[in-house]
Length: 461
Image (cartoon, rainbow, N blue to C red):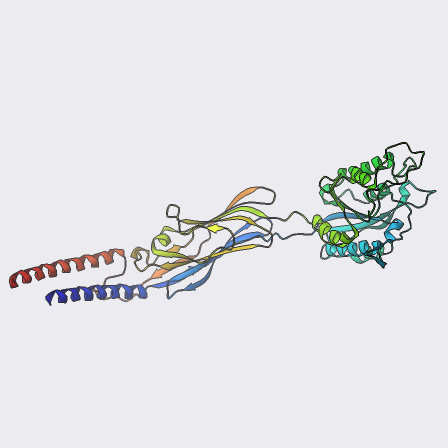
């Protein structure tokens, strides 16, 4: 019976001391003194932010968010672009087994869509157009086989009207003339990387400027290929779309007097333009009519867009003050939606590390964590202004493959205070030192009561 009483007394003492500690913990007031947003800017428009997004001062906790944003976006091309459009009479052939739908309708309508998308909200790009074919059998193989349709302009309406009114009456295809004329309309002010040429054709070149008067001859092939290759002096951004070739394995009609190399249509195409995998210059799309719209509206449009500004090997290191690490519990509220992050604070560096392998344009990575005051906090931190995160580091590799590191020392600040009124002397303060003193008192009482129980027990025997 006496043993039971002793255990009951010990239980009451422990409960009493615990209630005193909790009462004191609950009386501590937490305040956020400063909650600035720590911002690290990188790239042209991107940034890393650390901010306090919520706080529950009664529970003595705050929630902090790390946000990494790639705000570079995919910009539209700038500079000068020339459309080189085939206006030979084969462009009037029907497509899709629809007598009322001509090849030129599909090509021009798709080109209109391309122009609209490129020039919409974009004053930094000018587009012009030339057409090419031949005038007549008696007057062909000259620079005049090509003519200007529209000089470089930012006026989409004017350009669309101009290409809509092209006449398709040329008997043969003189791409050499078209390329030569288009080059003349580029300014000297725009650098090579911002000059573009797009060829839209449905015929195998059979005539060139000052050619040897034999269609599809070695002279035509070599001059047309050389004309394409000459574009590398002013631009590598050359895109050729060739459609309407239905008899590629056939041999063109060569006159008996021609003694040079005779090639099939496909062989001529390969020698002049190369292949999609290994083009003579830029990009080459040999396609059926059914692919015209997709190629112009999607493939060529995407080819014209600058390289997406993607950041790689991103590392964010968030540092905590020692007072925070020792006196606050750390836990994640929202796991990162990109990359991986430390499961807990590294006690050797007092930091967490977040790694993001890749962040594409218009993507944002977010992670959130909570800091909550421990019940056995050290009383030495009372009445001090504490930095929560004294440092934030960012390391990244940008879209030009350059690695850089940036730092911010902007930090939220918090403060813990106790009520000003004095507590009774027998009420100890919460904190590690007082807590262990109380444990010592309980131990002494336990020993005294234990001896008393042992003495009484032996006496009764």
